[in-house]
Image (cartoon, rainbow, N blue to C red):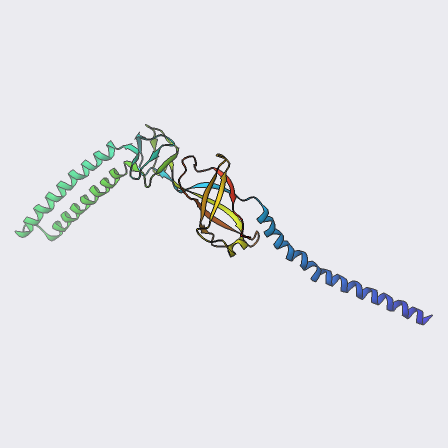
Length: 267
């Protein structure tokens, strides 16, 4: 009876120890295998996924007013092309021109006073303090003239680069405030592409690598090449961003179009 009881307890202890060992293995070794395969599954899924990209301009910016004034003329319409240095916005600056004329007159008066005091100083007929004050007034008037000339220089906005007008936000005869956006311009001389590829492609992918992209809007395929590779890899998706450029000029392509990137690792 006693030996049977001891034997039953022994079997229960063995079963409990086996259960604990199995639980420990399941939480360590057996659980690690699915985690290890999860990373490779993410990479494989990314490789099998269709790679999409959108055409973007090489440079773009929003032109804004630097003075408060009425728009006198907008020489070009939305969508028009322009050259670098071409006038895109002309303001009505009659008030600023009048202020410049006033500043020039004040400068003439201050210069005359200073020159007169210099001659009087040679005859010891004026104090040193008065001479220095007249000189400071002349310098102040010069600064006023320079400030007003700078203001007049902002009465028109010229194109910082060659490109096209993407959007006009204002109209002629409209009064605008300093800092208000007037139009968006783009440089479409070269169209760039941005897309995501698996990070394991870095083993063979280099700057200048050639590939093709099929644009949805035109239904055509165009040559492209890798321009630069992203500075870091996303550890979660195991991917890296690439920037490419359309290799050549195609008049039918415009910014905003999108398509499928036709690139694959070498066999």
